[in-house]
Length: 389
Image (cartoon, rainbow, N blue to C red; front, top):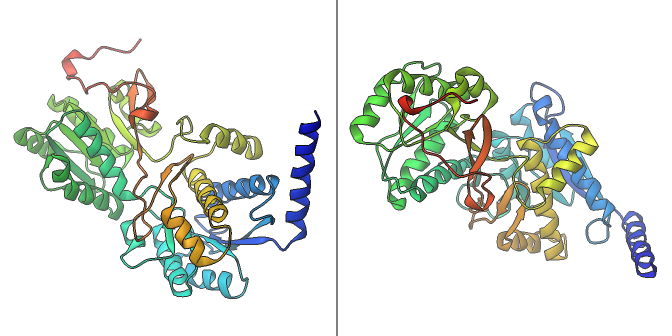
């Protein structure tokens, strides 16, 4: 009892000291009005939760943490100017990036010019981490990891040849293109990426190409409705690749569109509330308690950014930007979102999305193996399928 009382007194003293000193200010630009405000709400809520938890534990470097949130009004072109304000006018100590890759590009340019560390929380495009960056560090799962994860899974199953498809949008084309570039290194044969237009309903030509090439796996990046139309075509044409992976293939919209034909489809997810990643169960419970809602991907990205920044500050033991930059460059850690490790330009190299399969009507994690909740099942031929009871 005496030890417990002494511990509580020490925590209370640390909290009083943290509040007595000038706070550590962390600047963030995000949509708080405009068309993206509702989407960005989870990002803001997760950062506020992280701030609350840090301060309850005594703050950082013995100081209270205070978020400075500026509204970009859902206009990515304004983001760079707002980060200039955070640095030059508000004199913020630390920076966390804005919503999305387009906005993150502007924020990264400002951070580099001012030699200020920026945590890239949500910018997933390869363009954000161009060569030469020294102060921008990515905590989000990059687009490149989506394709790489699918390829690594295909290789683990012993597949040799795959078909790659992409919806005609920048993100999907980037993912599939990077997967195509990396396939050979993993011992996988892949033809050119087949790009299909928005609203495509007929995939007969792509199915014919897959059959002709002997593709054992079909990997597609796009929308849930695209995945649904692919499955409809598979059934109509009597086609069943051993492995079917499609972005959105485990979403509720996909299942609604194809019903029990959703069985055995594999989807890609950067975050799952039920994943056994480090601290995830506690994060989900804390978020639900504070906000009466379950966290989604943006919430996990915001919280992960805070946790990585927190760990880097503690390891650096300072807010000096060069020391902090060195700490982030060398840091290897895990968050509810997954692993963090970066290359020489601050781009994530350890992050991997989760692959989930619909099995008996439920989403199950089948890869990475360390987080799996069920064993992957091959996509069976249509003649062998039986109704789920």
